[in-house]
Length: 59
Ligand SMILES: [Zn+2]
Image (cartoon, rainbow, N blue to C red; front, side):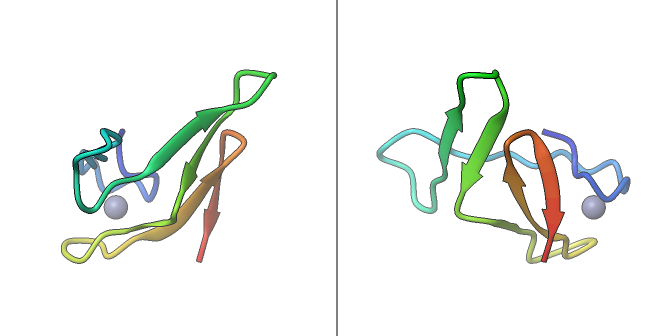
């Protein structure tokens, strides 16, 4: 996914069971994706946000 702050950075999230850290990715009945836990870049723009039901929630 592309960083939602607009910096253009591509964030790669690992959702396979063996990966650490990893994220749980789910899509609800309306097709809206959610991520668990929050995404926090530790470099660059240092964005910290949640993806819940297809919407970005900044921390
Ligand atoms: Zn960014």
